[in-house]
Length: 273
Image (cartoon, rainbow, N blue to C red; front, top):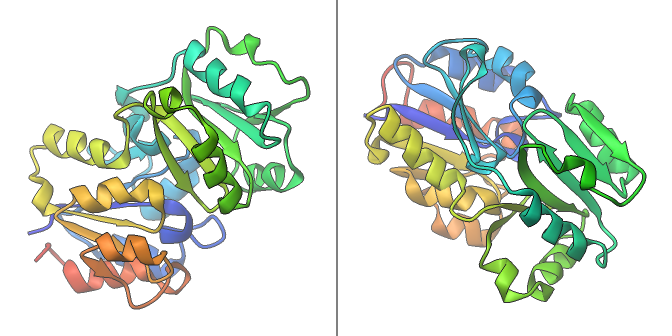
């Protein structure tokens, strides 16, 4: 019997940054199965989403943020686990980023800082209701004492982002967990941080066997949880290599109710099968 579903947000659960009614209804009809957002976003950025799925400020309901760097119990945003980057680690990536002519984005626990901000990213953060600041000077020294959660290079060009990863020294590649999301982000987390590791941590915390967990995603930062879960699912629009490692590929894409499909097929109107 499945006891928990982890779902990515962008290009999986959400349509235009909101949970469509078809997915809301399917989630609300589940009984005795936890529904846990697993996202690269910060916790404050998903509060409206938690309201839409009915888990906002609820005890014994959970969220995974920053690709697994933060695990929260939703009631009063209680932090259960946090793994962030040191200032020195972020500064190393920041200095390398100067040569790549990309927007650089640094997340602290409750704020997002954009360097070389592109209008499209400013618009995206505004729509996502993120607490963010555009920093005009390419200097991050003011974050020396901040709790840095995640670091990103931003460009809506996956080929270029992949060329950056290839260009980075092996010493950097071996120092961080590197992933891609939303076809515009090259993301860096502390080594060992991933959605899959967070799935395992939360399952152990809740005394749930990972075989009783479903994970739904669409992109490369979802691969670890798709592989870790008892049932790893990707939406129909995912790239072929992600489909190949998934146990199930939905028949419809995210904007047509892929999450609803998974719930109806594997959970039904009640307990997991």
